[in-house]
Image (tube, one colour):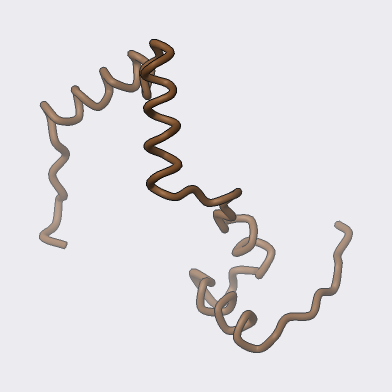
Length: 83
């Protein structure tokens, strides 16, 4: 497998190191697990998007997603432990 060498500032390296789930996990695995968001949205931008979608007759979620949410509310999952 091809590799690339990168340079990190110490604070970034420490953040990456702390994200490892085990001492044996590779930094490549940590980076692959990372959720790197696209352009962040403000609450106002989300509200504008929802208003525009609703005005056009669209629902924020499709019927299948709404049904799953309804089902989850009727049958909440309970943890097997107190934690």
